[in-house]
Image (tube, rainbow, N blue to C red):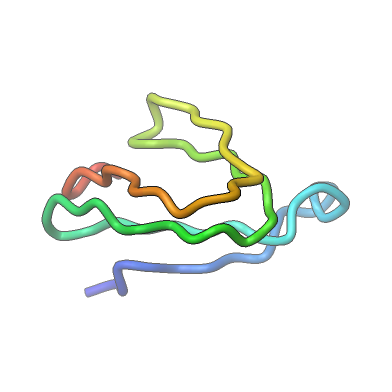
Length: 69
């Protein structure tokens, strides 16, 4: 069983604009709290929705449906 949260290095050529890539696939519906980190995020949800977020100034919750990937 793979961990629910994985971090990857950005692909070659993307390093100037991306610090890293991460993936999360919860086993159950979740709404984790995301704290501001000064970064912009491009989020692909279930390979169908694209969300651009940040740089946030306050914490917020993000809906993560179970097995969405």
